[in-house]
Length: 106
Image (cartoon, rainbow, N blue to C red):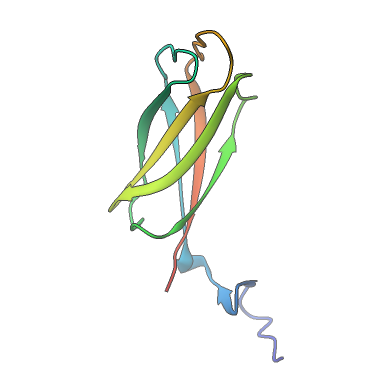
């Protein structure tokens, strides 16, 4: 394997992952109260994201207990973040900042 030390990269699958392959965004989301077993979905704008890209979610503050988060690219330039309430009662998460990182697939 030949290394190019003039450009930072790391491997993603069989291909090197370059800066142009990563899109990042942060959004402040305020999910409504989610009933037991229910879901709620909000979106974050991520320019350059396309359906099929992989999404990583980072929490700026600790997530609310009882909610499971699922991010995905739902449309061009849009990442959807679905929360599912896995508790027996309603959960109302406070407004919080969420960071998403989109890894482009080529």
